Amino acid sequence: MASPIDLTSKLLSFIEEDANQWELAANNCKALLDHLPEKDQATMGLNVAAYLERAALHREFVAEIKSEIGRS
Image 1 (cartoon, helix red, strand yellow):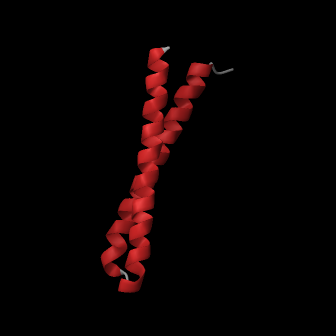
Image 2 (cartoon, one colour):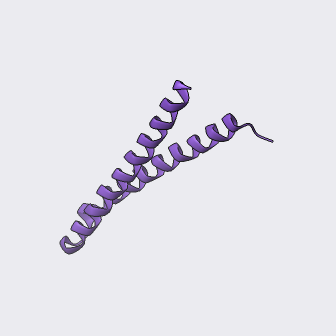
């Protein structure tokens, strides 16, 4: 059975990788923006912003958990 520290480490790694995937999705959408019809660019731009925000939230959450772990 994995220890709580091992499980926490695995969970944080998973969340960090999820943040990377959100950022990758944002970058891929951003690369497509210029190739879309103008009417679709605003929607895709909102997706880019949402994906980047999601990535940032994931990273902030991981940093907060790591900070709390470091204090205990």
